[in-house]
Length: 173
Ligand code: FES
Image (cartoon, rainbow, N blue to C red):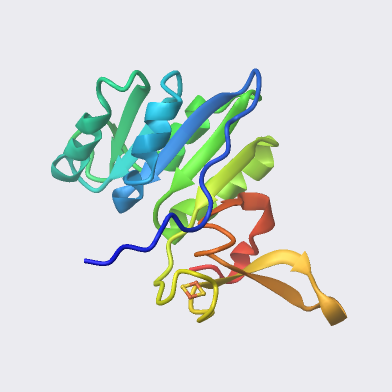
């Protein structure tokens, strides 16, 4: 196989005196593994549909982070959405790192905004080129360009990690 990379950016460090809280839903767990290796004193929150799906969080055991799980059917961990766990864990010192479905990312962004804490989201998009050429992975940012038009960012080359305050979540899906 041919492999092109590395592409895009990565999660920044939380900063001095800050505490990382990672939030992942479903397949969004994947980019969190290396972050958890890098930030072993962080908290890792994982949301899944059921205990069967949640078993993947066991891979984080031994990395040093605190792990909390929620499942929609309540078969393991707290019953409900992972965003409920996030609300319990947040402190003014928190920095959130999130990856998962669009609805989860929107909710995380809202929680962070209301709590006044910084959050970084790793966005998922179908990608054809991976180098900012095809424009297939564009997302609306809150920045304005010429004639007050919204600026689009490419998830592949500007991201995939963005400060959640930079994304226009209204049309994001
Ligand atoms: Fe082509 Fe991002 S995948 S611009």
